[in-house]
Length: 334
Image (cartoon, rainbow, N blue to C red; front, top):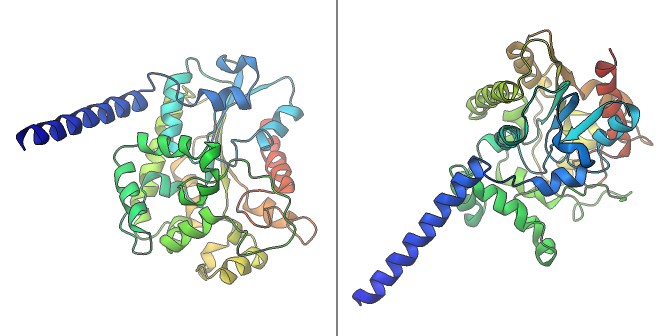
């Protein structure tokens, strides 16, 4: 009996040591854990960030067909280095930047998504509607952030791609050709996330409730990113804010209501200068920092034959990508 107990204790000890070492390796990026993405989204000169525009963000940026490619095609004399990774937020952006940024860039783009970036700060492990296994994962990953990376990598294995909906990561290959809305086909990630935390959108967009602290933490971590990237007071910084599609108009809002997902009726939810944007503007008033609020442009361009978001997903359509690139170009070309 004692031998069995010692064996179990020893195994537990080894597992604990491995977890701690892996967490330390990830937090300090002893190796570049996201180098495959860096290679995939960039040319051979991705490791030379001087005189380049650095881009950080999530799945709205992390794609070979995202707005970053449009920017590069539009400005061939400027090198854009896409450091974005699907399913990540400002916490991971800071880790990536610490590993890669050696010199100040020509400019910095940080893409923010109001739909779930505060969830990246703190995953709500006590939400009553989440299944038990997800609550456990959220609780662990709030403290051991390397588990988020493991989840991300696991989601990429072909053998488990059919189970992607069970994993807490949106699909980075989001360019779809669906033309008819279907509740069954709509993003499982989105449905499960918003069913689990039904106040996520409202509290994030309006900066209310338990997301107030998360918003403040996000602002501080963005400050850290700017320090890591050595932008100072002269290098241009573009904070590109992607709205949730339900903020655009009733076309998208009705979809969510059909799926049984609660959307706030508060008038501040859909105004251009909504609380999330106001908070960013108040915090970052430096002349070299520009808040690019995409809501006005996306709303004005969105119509029946020109939808800015995908039919069965919360990501941009090709038209939304073009709108985003056009808005950013207005600032870069100034």
